[in-house]
Image (cartoon, rainbow, N blue to C red; front, side, top):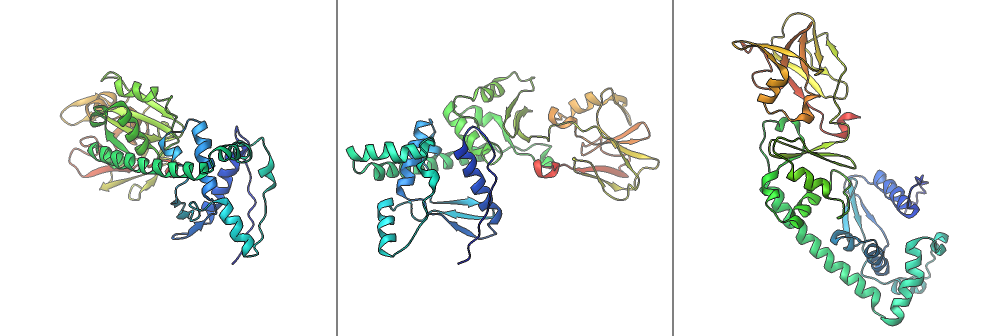
Length: 360
């Protein structure tokens, strides 16, 4: 079996233990291919230690479920086949088989919380309750089942809150607020944790005032709840997840030399023209304020009012590509009635970026 030594850089932070763990799992993730399975050697004592550590930190059900037996990791899977086996059993087997192992010298450092629990707290507990580690590990299993039930309930609530909007082409995560707002507070937090977990790091239970403010804001307000990796916006009865960077308005005008070919916009996807392109020197710009657009049969109209008529969410307005011929505003991408010529000879289409990957 091949051995690979990987040196990692541990970023400084509040917790050296957490930073080292993150560095290890980043290295694992980088090396796992599609269908690969990584087996790690955590055992029952490690599971009990993890539960106790997280309990002292005030973790919720998901945290107290401790380490799952298996989960996705990068393009592959992580499996922990020894979680049901005690440390004593493993050491006994290793000695019987004449195996040698390496002790991590950092395990003796009592400044690390896990080491303190392992060397001081758990031995004291087992001196009074010999089955303490087995009982703690069993409790973690019960909590894992409880978390599974919460996830199943959250999946049902997400399904009942699926939203149909005229802006589905954005590709942004969106839910109807109404079905969620009618749930109990605890159930709201459960479904929002479930929905947001793949999108951002979440606050602890004591820091959900931002969700309540967004949920309860006046109908004509434009509330948002800013989180670690983006923001949750409320608009037209829906809640939208907008990744960090996406909501930043664009400002760089781009000349469209050959309108027969799609045009890549800096950090803002791609536009193209369907049909026969209008004549003249074309460019793509963004809102600066006070724009006016001429509409057949309606005369000149403020762009702001037109966007209000189309119920365009505030977070989207600064990114909507505008097609200009010299200083004449010809079209607003993807908005029916504003996206092309009156005779429908051409239309402006925009493929929007969908989060961090499109903004890099």
